[in-house]
Image (cartoon, rainbow, N blue to C red; front, side, top):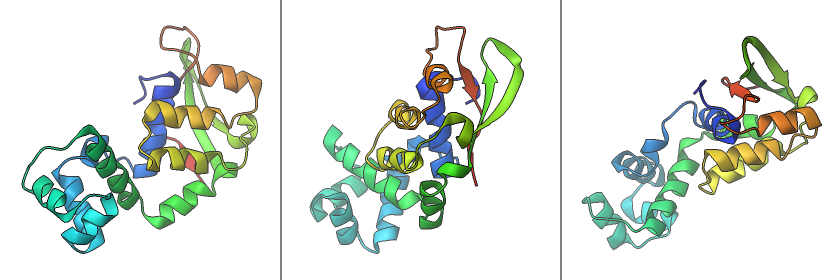
Length: 177
């Protein structure tokens, strides 16, 4: 993800932090169905967790189609079960210890780790990012939730620059703790 800038790039790194690097592709496929059913303990409970009828769940398991709304329900349930409680707590409570590795887009030799203090990160920022993730938000939405918590004007501007700009950052793997 080092070649993506702006909110999309920041969101991609936040997604990797939250999921432990798992692909987004597994959120709505057959792997997600199996994981949700294992976590729920049965197909009936899995259907209830996702918010669909047991017959709909069985149809999905048999390879039947899903509406866009049903796919979103499945994605939200898959996201909830794929993040262990310990990781969620560490991230949700980690605002003060977050570090974002950046490389300046206009000068690739210039690299640094930017911490929460430099960003002026407001308490609860990572919790809001998790909430966006769990509600089915995309990388851009997660990046926006993070930048909304930045109070330092320099970083507010630079974290939100667009792909077309010569300014901004490439983002490395975000760390908490």
